Image (cartoon, rainbow, N blue to C red; front, side, top):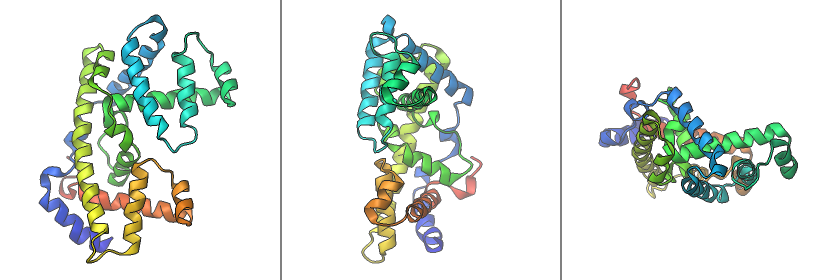
Length: 260
């Protein structure tokens, strides 16, 4: 890490000062506004059977289904089905009946539904639904990595029609703009990091493995599945993941202006 941080990461930051992440990109939306947007979204689905916002909700659940179809998480489809049973089928299905259909307890059903609402809000408003200005830069990279498919797959502008209130609509629009900006900078850093790890003049096997693991994480592959593929322990994979987070954080954040 010493060589990487002192030379490559510093060189990256100095050559791309306009491509660094700053506090201003994460601020501007308060936690209360995010919760208000989440409530609006869930209320919109609660009104689906009455025909309210039906076309927009069908499009959103369709885009979310595409996300779920590529998830490596074995419970993703169950979460999606629980949400559809609850809000989208013609007749109301209670949580106890949903639990019986999925073979889980009722509390799990509500956890599934909440998780779907959180992820669909990320499809609507992006990073603002998942995080605010990060004090822990490595954790910020973790959120960007784990949410990459959602943040890159922002739903179409039609979702703005779901948020009728001026504050909520403004928050969603702001979040979408910030997400596109942040993910553009994140992608630049990932490409530069990939080139560094594959540099024919100085690459080492462990660095090549690290960036391969990063790409798999961006694709949503679980650490357990990665460990099985590489024939190593999950501890080794997690160590590489955390090192990737530290390295990308060293590239992405201006260390001289951490307070924004």
